[in-house]
Amino acid sequence: MNRKHDVFRFRVEADSQHPLFVVIEPSGMVIELDEGDHVTVELPAAPGIMETVITHSPERLTISEPGGTPAKVWDSSGKQVW
Image (tube, rainbow, N blue to C red; front, side, top):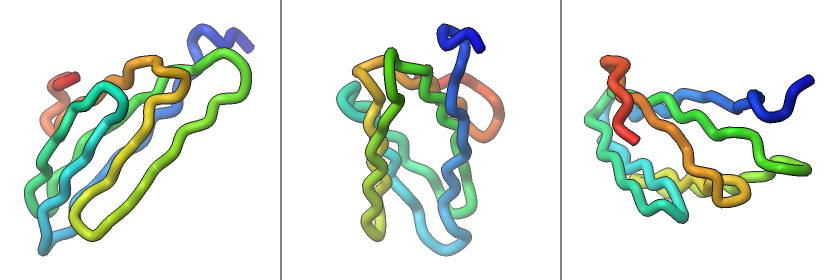
């Protein structure tokens, strides 16, 4: 396995009745998702054990970038926004 190319990709969705703020730290990106919308987040592999923290509150989901390696984010249309 070539760790340089390993990534963790996942989708974050707002429910059908409430908007959701997705915050990427430490980069400081804030994405507001309308009700029912989604983004795809890709966290690249970091050296050693890849560990991230995801914190949820009613209107916000905060995702920390492992090892300070920048995340990539695509909106629901497939356009890369970060």
